[in-house]
Image 1 (cartoon, rainbow, N blue to C red):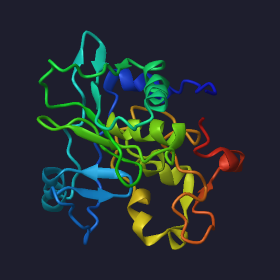
Image 2: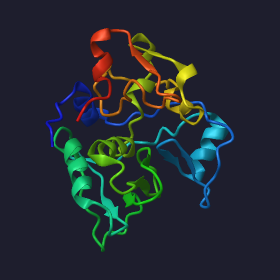
Image 3: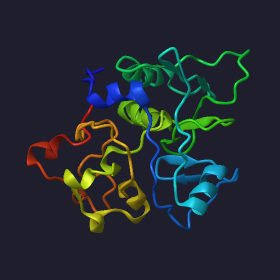
Image 4: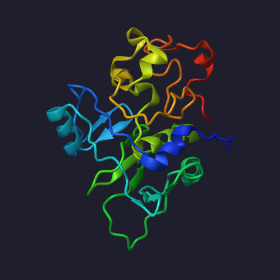
Amino acid sequence: MAEWKPRSLLLALCACYALAAPMPAPMGATRREDGSVLVGDILYSSAQWDGLLSKNLDSLEKLWPRENGVVKIPFKISDSKLNGTLLKLGFSAWQSKTCLEFPELTESDTRKEYLNITIQTGCFSGVGYTAGNVTTISIFGDVCGLKGITHEIGHAIGLHHEHSRSDRNDYVIVKMANVEFSSAHNFFTKDTVNFGVPYDYYSIMHYREKGGSASGERVLLAKDARFQDIMGDAP
């Protein structure tokens, strides 16, 4: 695995590692059988989606509990066909640079809050901690790849996309006319608290320049041209 260089954001994670962010609630989304709603690569529970519709805000209760300076986020692999090696490399990418730890859930552990690692259609994750509920991550075969798995774990610990943070318009231009309709929500800005951490073009949570494009045209233009070719290029 290529070295994933530490960023100042990772240091901020240990102080308050996950941000809750208001966002416009996309209308017309289809509920799944259990009432949840999948929007891009983010999965909302039925209760979370109802909260979005009623308040137009994402939940503020996203922080996984921290004890003695360490945040332990247990996980359970629900499908034996899942590539456990890649998953653990994805966990290691976060664990080696932060105060996060990812222990595997034991049979005797009856807690309800953990990462449920599944194989569903697509690569997606719930966002952060929800009291009384699991946070689901879907890893669709080898399609996600190591970078995709690491990205989805980022959502599971509570992070949204870097290019959606509140100050993104100071750093990138978003060509919404080039965005696939179903991906538009991935480019809405959010009222994030950024802790004075500089914008990170290179972030694992940042899309590449053509991410979400409807026709292969550029969607994201860096205001500092030096960063155009490395956006979202963290290994």
